[in-house]
Length: 212
Image (cartoon, rainbow, N blue to C red; front, side, top):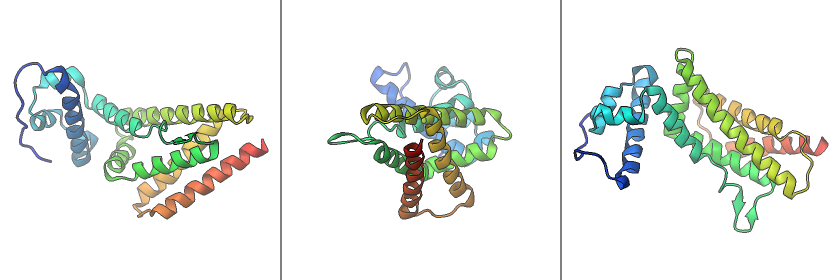
């Protein structure tokens, strides 16, 4: 990790600089976590690399936990299905939308930075219970978004879905389980393998919905 401090002008940042400062802080924090782990990460080192005062950091993030929460929040926004369940003709149908969301979610989650953060949370959560809550927050957000999409599709397609929340849980946990298997085995996953898994899992979910 580069330890040379960035040069930054003194004084309160202008409004237009705030977003850049936040992004830089989170980028530096993410690099710190990936290099040193959660337990070994140092707020003092982050401050030095960022070239800011501790007051500036603590006014935004008072702890490593808050920083990691913010990094996870940024990842959650990356996984927002809003644009993934649309095409130029309008909203996708339920099956196509679930397939689109799952493929994107897994593709992004297998990229280097997100893969590293997920490995960190999985490997260190037994020592730091707060990491488990961070992971649970992301899971709850995913379930809510998928459940909302299922409800919307059920209404527009005049489809009876008795329990969208339960279907969303099955969808998220099925794909989370597949992802954790890839993460812990360190296997190289091809696009074709990922797409085949998504096709099969969504097909099963749709078959369950059709028979209910």
